[in-house]
Image (cartoon, rainbow, N blue to C red):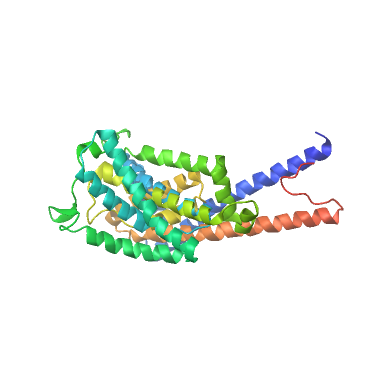
Length: 381
């Protein structure tokens, strides 16, 4: 390699490192800014920020709290991955919330109606959940590719329909049975349950056994998007549909597949809770996880590792908020911080994006002024 090639390579590596550092700095600065805003709110309300943070950290690092945090993070992670699949394709699957709730309801009903050998029973329940989630998401996908209906509008409407359909199905005349003062699907037999794991020293509280499923989904998501031709086509379509069409990608087919995959991943969101704790879908089954997944996917920038950190942060904030009321601190302060983080990270990523564009324009201008032909980032010398 001659000196010109060496200089170009060093500059390229330097720009790649700077871009990576800026991308990493964006969410960190967003969290710091959210902490500053929250501190101001606490001071205005008469609560000491540092003492409040200390209370949250002390409670959040206790063994049982760590177990609660890991369980919450498991469902948050699956929700964020489901959203991120659509985001990487530039699709906004706002319907993840309805997809996972309807999938959990029907999967719970099927799981409670049959008795099979353990692994087969669990596999059937998970398969039904993924199938229902994918089927519900495919409605929005077909509306988009066939009629050009925005997936944002259709998935929001499908959320409302899924809620109403779930309420209709969760009736004693259909899929539900009376369980004390509550109603829910017939309990899933032991063969369809996934035992928790007591892996945290100092407590007998068990972590969802399906935390392993979340890890597998994260690894599969990374491999699919970054190590396969399909993943390349998906990311290329998300960046520029016209460029994807020019390279021979069937955009409509990609939209359909991406939405179905997002829905199938959404079907997994309720499985850790269903198979590891409640064993039935009832009126108190967790809701709103789909919208939480949107926030975490944004915070993690659709990267499996970034999403993991985002899910743990969200779980820590949610778990730690339980102790605030005991100390006469409004637990709503956590919601303020979460909302500020989402808003801040969106602004931070946009500022980083604009800075990178401006820096590239300045680089090209300098090379033109010096008489050196500008070269693309990946061009060979």
